[in-house]
Length: 293
Image (cartoon, rainbow, N blue to C red; front, side, top):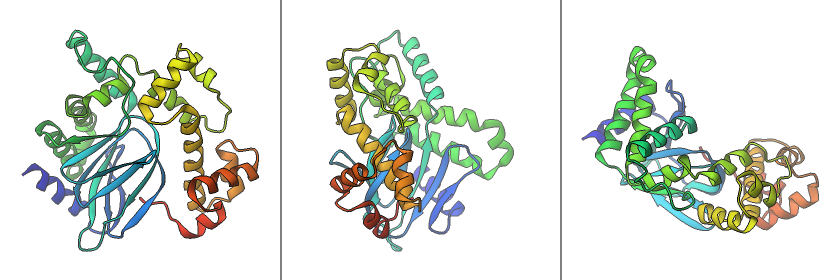
């Protein structure tokens, strides 16, 4: 019943197609009524829950298709391709995006690990990339309780932070707990490296710099990074830069400015690498593609 209540609540607050920034910080509702192919995007640490329809995310060639039976956890910033290939007026994509606040997730993870005496599944490897998890009772009820705050401004102001914490706890205790705890708990060096890289795309950072920053050898860092993201560090940085640039171009930014913003000093190199990845020049691509909500 809770899922139907969540669906009704979203439909009531978002009766038309679009993306709604709610009064709850970091919570967005979306309704998509047109099919959109997968195009470059950058996922921040988020949870995406679908109430109807199907969504798709592609990470390094691996397709993750999910609907109302699974929610998606992205525990770190990742360059992906995302789309809604099956959305229509008759079968709209309806759901909610919740941005995860890293500090809250780290604090909760540490509390869980401390209480468990270290006997958790958060250790023993690098964090996983995109994870799909079943809607368990804890997650479903926490999401409903969070979204119910949208109907009462006073409750929202007083209880919002606590309800968000409850949802984050449900994620850390649910089916995606291993990916979540590894990304935000002890031994989260790869996630911290990605967090740094995502805000310094216009700087030249080498693999040795990244490895030294987290106290690993180059070989160990390279192996753990690829385990976490499915990409090598160099592939990851290039994908992050090109995906960010593609999004900027789709939003109307001049090609040269978009390239400069993400660290390319040579426009010809940028155009070559962009065409190699997307099959079109930046200018051709900007005339044919829109970044989905």
